[in-house]
Image 1 (cartoon, rainbow, N blue to C red):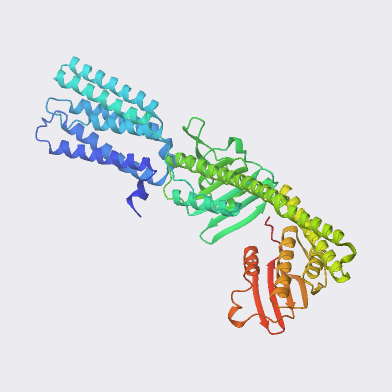
Image 2: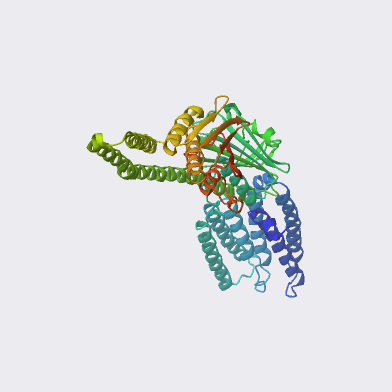
Length: 548
């Protein structure tokens, strides 16, 4: 365990150690000072020895109990102030410049007030002590004790200057700086974002147990993720699990459920003691009875982090937790904004592609059909029947392709819709008929039952089959192509077999590259078996692919 981990975000420990070190230094200074005249020697030593003993007990308190450390803080502040005044009384002599603890104890009191409360409390305390210092000095002078007026005024000036500097730092005090969460990568889903938020909070607080409850704005359930020594666990619960939690009023909170104690930050960032405001149903799930609650809010829902197993937490963790919660909420908002930006970019790209297809490919196909029909009419009876039939077949194939292109244009122009299920067999009948007629090969479809897939996956499979038929006819000189479909265990099995000449053994690893790339992009698997007279493409695809 490093020194940083012992004292970082634990100012109560720092103040306690500083108090003990300060009291020990001045106790030793009084004991070793040869200029002491013995007038108040015994009393001053007893005072500082008692203060040192109490300081050791306060170190133990700061290490063991964040609740009592906070609740006793006002009394400890009064104790420090009394020691300050008593130290002045016992050591304010002409030879006590280096043994008087007035400036050091004043800095302790002011720093304690700033760290535990704010600069306003420190100002009232500091200037109150200055007034008491003046009153004590005046009382000592009026009682006949020897006081060096020049040194007395000089010390008052030191005190005011020191307080001014400390208060300025208190006013400028900022919330703890926390690093930004790593930006989401394209394709990250809500699950990955929740896991990243849990890792982020655990790393900054040193928690050993983390529970995240996430209530999406448009869903009735609550997503719960629990991360402990035995790994990550996920579950979905009903909305009643957060019935006793009001997101709008939730605050960062340091809690102890067993003792019904809690510290929270109010609207003015002041630490207030209270009872825990933790959803009762969550603590048994996460096994967290003492720790830190971090509520966070964003445009897509409300969330709650419970962090347990933190070593030596204190009131500083409330300010740290607020910064962490703010960053996590911002990360969720950035993820939503990024998704909206990507959706807008996809929409613009779809519209641009649709315009290009309409203005180029669709118009070219329409023009080709028009020219073929004009050529056929101009030639009239001069065409032999075989040539006339071929022109008609080409024209009809172009018209079918034109219809296919227009269907793509309509799909691109339509707003993105949730994936809908459809029977792939019906789509494949039309696609195979068109491909067979276009390339002059016999085609057959073997699908023993319904094959329900999303519309996007149906489009991808049709494109794969069209490419496979074209390859079989152009490169393999095939006369027959058979396509077999099957659906089992969430996987779509597609087998395309032809009776062509096949691939060379040396070229099988890389061909057909266009089909391999399309299958890989969908997340599927591809295998090729090719011999003279038979080529089989075996393809497996995830049946519920929702791209598009």
